[in-house]
Each structure stands twice: as structure tokens, then as C-alpha cells.
Length: 632
Image 1 (tube, rainbow, N blue to C red):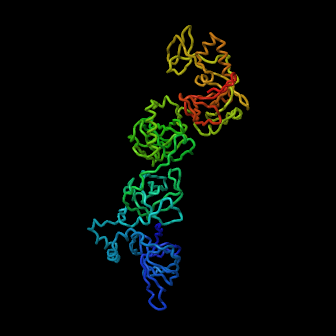
Image 2 (cartoon, rainbow, N blue to C red):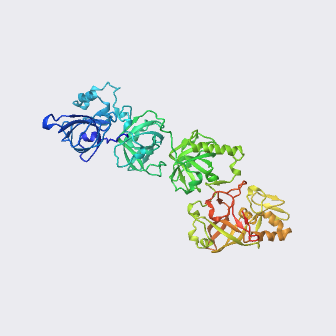
Image 3 (cartoon, one colour):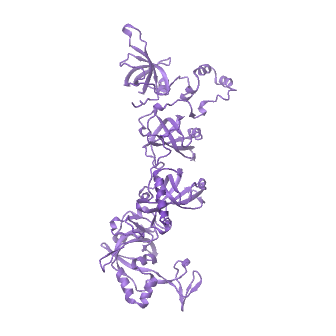
């Protein structure tokens, strides 16, 4: 038999404030006081309880028989001048076989529930006739008899485990409840000062034995009262709080509501309960974070790939703070995904993990800054060395990677969700696949910042007149700077050196075409090498020594189909705005069927899953018209 739920109503009944209440209470004692004869059964003296407090009551002209421990609903009642409740109408809700809780007699002369249970009745009656000054003098030397109001976490049995109900059952239609839960997370005390209003708050996450989770928040004086006494991982009984719809921007917990604890809250120590786990998580795979709304709070688990030093940072509001960036990887969707996590605050100067450790981050916020990234918030929690299934599974995956000599993710195919080099990371640029007509429909006014689009099209012409490449410095630190030829030598102004030879780098101009039109593009070396499948040095040799091979290379690339990442930028030319388009080489197209070498086969454009600004290499699929075969 389930434990009946009682309404915490005795205080309101005794105080005469229950005119609109229909509380459910338990009869813990009853006696017929109507006398014999015809009057028998017309008055029944009872003691009613809400599980915490009890008081005397009288059933006038009972309409239903009652017995000890039965549960009744009071539908109409009056308060007698002798602190006796006169029950005029009631209904028997349920029969029960034992007392619920450990209720104490309640008196209206008591200050509140807490003081009534912590102060003896003799002490109350003795001092009630004295003034505040007399009571102060009487208790002047009684330092050990401090007011229990200053001890917020009660040791006494004000709440009973018989009253406990699952967190999942809490709702706004149930004003009285008791829950037993473990504090799985306790946030820092936060302060605000907005001129007209200032204050403080802190929040806790609660978990019960049925797996129910809910967030609770303390404000102002209540926060100050409880902050030092509530300890993370401890188990408590909670009662008295207001439920309101949960703000999902600040919590990952699945409950529809959250609790605000107030001055009438009772929190009582409970014995540690092994049936209540120490934590519960709602994990999001790194590969799925792109599909989550910005500012959503997430739980993630990953392998620490890199830890950067903590640095001082000045916010837009000109406030000094500290930040520390780490990189996490996981094995989402059969691939390897990497994301940056930024920790804010000096408390992250010392982290409880090192590179190549597995770590759980509970409550981090998703951001679209630099593509996709995560940020710590006030309630962020770092968990290591746990037996959580997702945590141990990821460790096993990474250990297997190391055993096969593949732990160096730099040499593997990694989807980098955070790409700091990308100029345009906004999600709006990558919402769908584009046609050439979509590019032509744009005006310079539409492109206020660099914009990326993806197009599947054929290369229908490659311009060779005027040169496809240029002479570049062979020194890699110059990053392909142009050199000037002086006789048989090449001079680089950037490094101020002369070289006997140079490197050729592509600066390719070509036209693409699809069913909606054609468009001229330009590309630099990396993308051009992917299109022509030859280096610029090789093409220069072909041009000077084997022109037929030069022509065959151009012919092979012409009318081949590719998926292009196109970068659009508005530039002024001859006092007018023009759109400048480049084939971008900083997009990564990911599908599940990867080969052993990590080369990605994009046989079908419709199956491409696109992530913005994720890598430094462009993979594509194209069809050669020469043999009709499919290449990747």
C-alpha cells in the first residue's frame, strides 16, 4: 500500500487561515464524546495530523464513520476559541493502518513550526507571559540554548520518510510535499547589483532514488542562511517550496519545474542512502552539438586532447577575468569529433585532469562562437574517475586507439567543430545546399561579411591564358609569397633572400556550371591541386616539356563534378561594390563510410552531412566525362 499524501495544514487550521482550504489529514486518535442515548455518535473528538504537526478537533454530526489512522479530507471547518477545530463537513478518503510521520502538538502561541518542535511546551507557557526584555534577562547566561532558527538544517524528526514522494510527481497543483534527495551539485553564491535591486542566490541539483531530478534555488536571506550548511553529495529531506516552470537555459535536468525555497522551507538531515546514486547525466555526443540551439546547457564526456594555459581576459563590459581553453574529442557517429571548451574564472587555474584523460563536464553552455564551442557556467561541474558507462566506454575506445597507434588525432580524419581561422562561422551560412542561381541572386548589400555557400557543379572551363600559377618563395615560413626573377635567381622581398629556384603556387580562375547557370570562381593552391590532381610545379614542367600532358590534365578536370565550398566577399572595385567569389578550402564534408586511409567517399551529394569551418582540407566527389566513372 502506498503512503498517503497529507497536506501540511495544521498551522493554517489553528491560525484560522483555512477558510478556503480543503486539506487532507490523518486521524491519529478518536473518541465518541456525545454521551449515551439519542446523542450517541453526534460528536466525535479526534486528533488530526498533517505528518508534522497535530491538533485537537471535533467532528460535529458525523456523516461517515471514522477510525484511528484513517485519512479524511476536511471540506468545511471552523476554529474554536480554545484552539479546537470544529469540522462541519468531511469525507473519508482512505483507511490506513499506522501513523504517518512523527507529529508534534501545535500551538498558535508558537512562533512557527520549527520553534514549536524545538521548544518544550512548559518553556513556552512559562515565558509567554513575560516581556521580551524579561525573557532576554532570564536567558542571559544560557549561551548553549541558542534559538533553533539559527540552525537551518534540522536534526529533529520534523519530517518523516513515510511522507516522502518521488520528485517526478511534484507539480504546481500540490502545495504540500516532502522529498528525500541527494545534492548532486551545489553552485556558487552569485551576487547581483542592478542599482534599484541587489541580492544573492545559489542553486542545487537534487536526485532521488527513483531517478527524479530537479533544480532548487535559494534567494537573498534564505540563501545566506543555508549556503554554508548544505553540502554536496549529502542526503536531506526537503519540504516547503514554490514550484515554477524550469528555465532550460540554466539546467539540463529533465523536470518540467524547478523549486524556489523560502522562509517556510524545512530541510532535515537524512541517513545516507545507497539507493540514491551520486549523479545522473543527460549526455550529448560532440557530433550532435551542432544540431542543438545556442545557449543550451549540456552534459558532455570526452578525451582531453589539449590543455592551454590560463590567460587574463577583458570582457566587453571592461571587466577583468580569466579563461582557459581545452580541446575534447570523442567517437561520435563513427568518426572523431573535436571541440573547444572555455573555462571562465581563476578557479580553473588548477584542473583535476591532464591531457589524454577522460572527463565529464556537467552543465556547459553551447555557443556558436568560432563555429561550435562550449563554455563553463556557474554550475559547471568537472567529474573524473567515475564508473559512469559513457565515461568508461570512451576510455576503452581511446585505449584501443593507442594500442593500434592511432592516438595521434592530427594524422586521422577529425571533424573540428571549433575553427578559429574561419571568418564566417554563423549557422545561417550552412542551412542548406545551394545552386548557382542562389549566388547570382545575392547583391553586395546582402553580403555584409564573408559568406560561405556550398554548390555541386561541373567545371566547364579552366583559364590558362595569362598563367595558372605564380612564382613563390621556397621558404615555407613565407607562406607562398611572390618572388621576383632576376636572371637565373629569385628574390623574396618578404624574407630578403635570393634563391636559385622557386616554388609554383596556383592562382586558378575557372568557370562552374549547373542546371541553373554558370559562375566564375578563383582558388588558391590547395583547392586547385584537388581539382587538377597535379601540383603547380608539375603543371609548369608539363607546359614547358610535355604540353600534351598539360592539355590532358586540363581536359580531365574539365566537365568533372565537384562539391565546392564557395566564399563570397563584397569588395569595392572602380568605386562600385562587386562580389568576389573564391573556392574555399576550409570546409569538411563528413559521411559515415570512410576508408582505411581516412579518405572520404562522397558517392551521393544528398547524403552529405555538412559542418561549418571544420578542417583545412576540401574533400569532394566528381564524375569524369572521359570514362563516365565515379571518382572520389
